[in-house]
Amino acid sequence: MGRILAIDYGKKRTGLAVTDPLRIIATGLTTVETPQLFTWLKNYMTRETVDLILIGMPTNWDDTDTNATPLVRQAIARLRKEFPHIPLETADERYTSKMATQSMLDSGLKKKERRNKALVDEIAATILLQDYLRAQNG
Image (cartoon, rainbow, N blue to C red; front, side, top):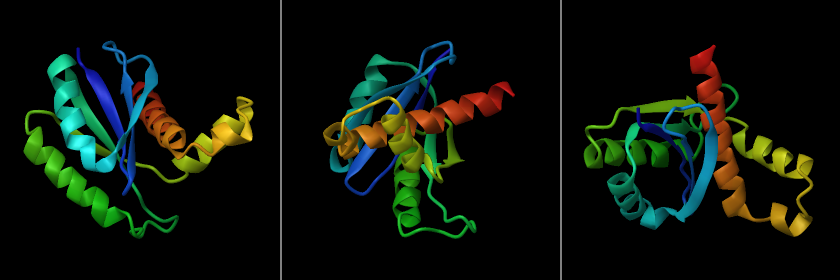
């Protein structure tokens, strides 16, 4: 069984999280500068077996598109082109960044650490993946 790779795609940075091969635990992987994302993913895919890509789809509370939605749709098209053999699913990413910030507060991180946007993106990807796993295991 291969891993599930979660992507919290952003204009500047992209947060990544991954499951263990048994798909039990979601772990933050890293944050990549978005222009380097596809190079990073190609390298990662040569080392690890990924059976599913999960990407967060940004929407407003009323289900309308956000200003980031078109960027994510472009990324999805490129992911499907670059990795046609790996299934791709989208997941609602509403509130993941707020939840990531709250998680950082709850864990006692200092203010300086909480301002680290890369860490917020990585935690948001992890939350996205944890929610997906929870829904799958019902």
